Structure formats: structure tokens, C-alpha cells
Image (cartoon, rainbow, N blue to C red; front, side):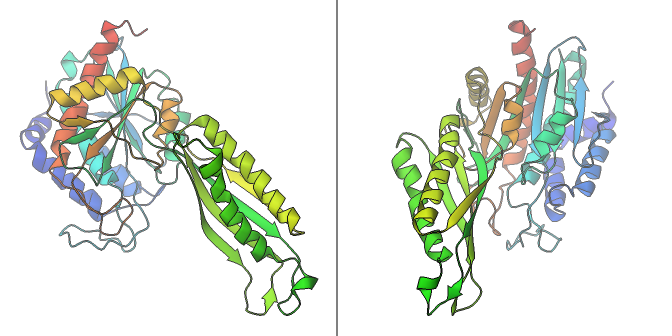
Length: 391
């Protein structure tokens, strides 16, 4: 028998989900601090009888709607964390937490996938497998997906789907393509050592600022001259530090930045060339340099079969489907795709400022259509797996 509370929610689903979205937006929580967000989602799921799995997670959760226990398993993932940004919108439901904001649309993702869970729950008696809904913490710092994976809850999942909104596409636009949709995200540090001296006696020292300046300009030749123009790659130095007064040549300097790539071979090439360049330049000036490389999430990688299936379903439910990606932004959904086939799907949420901007907004009209789509995607993928003898 279907839960009466669920039937009531389904009848007014658009209003229900907008209400959830606005509450999430008003009370954003940073990565690994999503305690109240997790509590709210658990309560909403419990009210309609959706099971929350008992997993060793401090924040975030995985819920399950089980039909035929011998059928395939499909996972749908959204993320729940916010950013340390002071909101500057004029929304009536703007953030009530000073210095914190859902400036990347994770509140939209959560509301939409909660709606999908409601819809899948309604049809649980006829479900030919299991659908797991991942409400993932800590996406913004690239940690949450690995925490979910480490619980083992995805070990029997046959296919996984995720979503991200884009603020440069109208409501009703869907972006889906096979291959990479987001980039691998790596961080680097460069520590440069010279010899300090009086600014009036530069010949007595080795100027690390000169070394750093030459390194910054030379690193740009990696993308322009070592990577094919047909490949997308980015190398940006975003932090430079050296010295603390006007009349002293310092002993050291420091650089920091990011590398974004779509191809794994290019990803391996760039730090190799960086090492060659920074050491060559530093030695030529009489100093030394050290590259410290921090590997982040890999590039997402949509399975061709599931990208095509997702696109075809999108057209059927009224989306205008385009072959677009998020460019060189990063996404830890890529960790799931290292283990499980599936697709990462882009949803238009109206024209707005870019992600991570203090005036970023989402058009609420996108929520219900997205919820319905992912519910149908979960159910349809189960049928597709059965038809193709998934195991």
C-alpha cells in the first residue's frame, strides 16, 4: 500500500520540491559539515517510507528503493555541500548563514533527486530491481565520492547516473555526450630557493623572484607547444609569493596553481614537462626548484551506451538535448565512473552568473522536470539491464 504522505507529496510535487530547494538554499553547509542537511533529507525520506542504509558516514547518506531483490541495481547521485561565499542575490530565500552559499546548485541537485526518489517509491511494487539514491557530501573538495565508495555500498551497482546544472543554458536544455564531460583536476605547488641579499647588491644573491617570473611564463608553453591543439588542457598559476619588504632580495619564492585535462596521457605529460622546465630555469639562474603535485579527481567518462540511452530518454520527456560538456570544471563523480559504467548529465537551469559567483541563481522551474527525468531514467535503466542480460 502506498504511503498516504507520499501520495499527498506527489499531488503537489512541484511545490514540495521548490520548498525543499528553498530551505536547502537558506541553510547551506560546507563540505563535511552537512549535518543538518543530512538530517533533513533523512527525515523527508523516512516520512514516505524510503529506507536509508546504515553506513559509516558522518554526513551524506544513501537511500534505497528495492523492488525485485534479484534484479539489477541502478544508482543516482547528487551532491549536498555548499561553498564559503557570501551571497549577494536579492532572493527572498537567500542564505541565512553568513559567508556560506549554495553557489554551485547542489541544493537544486538535492531537491530534484529527492523528487526522483519519491516518484520511484510510488512505483516500488512494480520495480524490477533496486534504485539507490546517493546524497553525497564534500563534492566541492573532491572527497565525498571516495567516502561513499569506501563503504562498499556501490559494489553491486550495475550503472550509475549523476547530474550537474549549468547557468548558461535555458530550462529545458539537457547536455549529454559520450567520453569526458568534466576535467581531471590537479593542483601543484612550486618551491623556489635562491640566495637572499640586499636589493642594492643583487650580484651577491640568487633572485628567486626572477626565477619564479621566468617559470610562470615558460609553463604556459606546455599547453601551447607540448599539447596538441586538438586536445583541451589548462595550466594556471594562481598564487605567487616572494619576499616581504622593498629592499631585500628574498631567499625563496612560492607558486601554486591548477592543471585541468581531459585526456589521461596529457595529464601524465604535463607534470613531467613542468619538472623539466622549472628545474632547468632554476639551475640556469643558480637556484633550485621543487614541484609538489597533488592529484585530484580524474575526468568524468560517460559510457557511450548510457550516454546515448540518457539522451534518447531526455528527448522523449521533452528536453532539448545537446552534445555539451562543462568544459574544464572538475567533478568527483569521475571516481564512480572508474568503477561503474554510466553517465553524467548536464541540466540547464536558466541564464545566470557562473558557478561559484555570489549572484549565482537557479530557475526553480527546472526542478520538477529534472526529478521526473531521473525517476524515469532509473526505472528505464533497470529494464534496459534486464533486456541485455546484465549479469
